[in-house]
Image (cartoon, rainbow, N blue to C red; front, top):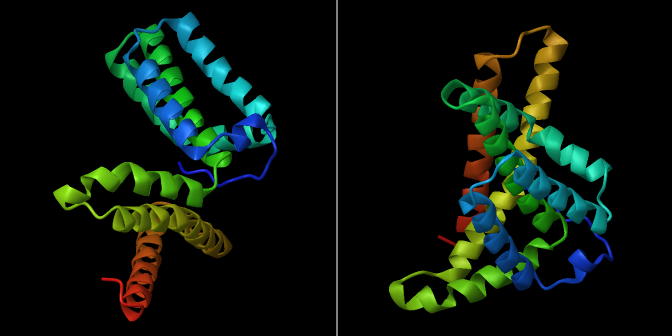
Length: 197
């Protein structure tokens, strides 16, 4: 799930992108590696929710992010219950939800261009190993820009099938895949026309 920048004047909006990215990496590692129980996992989630409040994105944007992640949360919770105790499943699900919401909070409060600039600078030392930082940044920016496009394709297919009274299922996947691949071909042709291989 990739959130889009929401303009604001909060302290989180004003922090440099590099600081936010580094802080997010540290926090994600801490949340992932620390052996949490229900209380500590809940505290982590409440901390992330507080971050949304500080950024002025509570409750509407936060609820929207949770709603978009609902299938991931449900799948994770069900699969965890099959192999772990209910308490362990709850803790793991809350940890993953906190990480997803934290990543979304960073993208909600940081312009994509700023994140890409940080990425290019961070990958600069790897240029000697054959990594092209600008190409990586272009790939990431295109990936981010494709998320709303594919989401719109899914909405249009859903609406068309609903208008015909068709049930969703494999009939939903095929037209979505065709539309996405056709769009990818058009983007590739546009890039080639501009001399980008």
